[in-house]
Length: 113
Length: 113
View 1 (cartoon, rainbow over the protein chains, first blue to last red):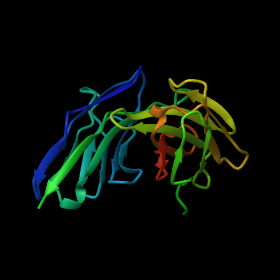
View 2 (view 1 turned 180 degrees about the vertical axis):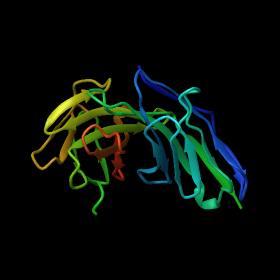
View 3 (view 1 turned 135 degrees about the vertical axis):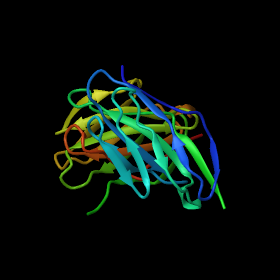
View 4 (view 1 turned 90 degrees about the vertical axis):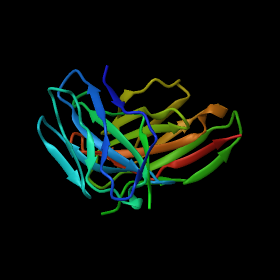
């Protein structure tokens, strides 16, 4: 079945550091890929998405590229801020009768001033 | 546009009781998904409703059930509550099959004592 694997956390960075959060996936078809963010005490917000190979999703300085050859969708940001502290989830969705989001375990990012 | 709304935001129930959680999707979204986010277990898919029908179900016992109404709002019912049902229950909505993305509500925090 479908699965999403995220790197182990938590991650602690200083403000303005470069961020990479790894995500790889296993899917039977051609999934859409997503990054969601969950701030403390809140629900999930869609951060960015990509629906086909080589697509790059971007939002709020975050980027991720859909790499079919390596089945990856790594999240990057050039300069993190304290306000980026949150839990980040990588997820995939396959179309059709099996439509649902399959999530990775999530990773907690803490950014210190 | 109004987002996905969930009610109540918090509730406390006693073991063995029954609970009903409610979700109103974004206007124009016909699919509603329910997820359980329990401490240490990540986001687990519960149910998917589309056009009033249950389309997919996660690996949960039958005491977890729900329905979708003609206006596309949805209820999640949990019978015979157990302590391990304590979790954040998240509802998401999308256009059918969700390939373009899913919008989440802020969740209902259920505590079973």
